[in-house]
Amino acid sequence: MSGSGPVEGKRILVVDDEPPLASLISEILASDGYMVDTAVNGLAALAHIEKHHYDLILSDLRMPELDGPGLYRELERRCPELLKRIAFVTGSAQSAGMEQFLTQTGAPILYKPFRMQDLLKLAADLLSR
Image (cartoon, rainbow, N blue to C red):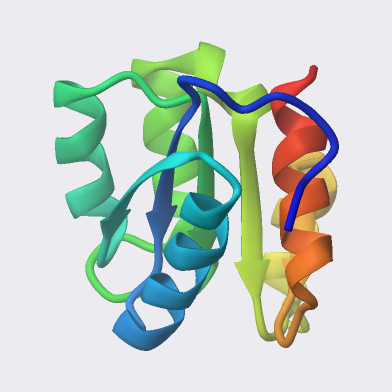
């Protein structure tokens, strides 16, 4: 199960309010050699980001307390260097606000349900930038 490049030492933060999905994404990425942490929403993600360096952030769009767009805006203020290393994983972006947000940011998006190889390719592509 290999992505498209070396992953040694790369750390990924998975932000999703659905524990089974966060766990599945984490297991897929860990099986390819990544170090993976999870957070249940944007607020928890920011707490992780204060403590650790992340090479990539994979975030759901819709979450309680602080959603994906809210997390993105906080990263703009706090860690703008991470903006090129964030992607969104979502079941749907079909609200005008979400579509506009994704268009404005240009952030990559992976739609649920996704194939394991698509997740690994997204991670490898973003980490090779």
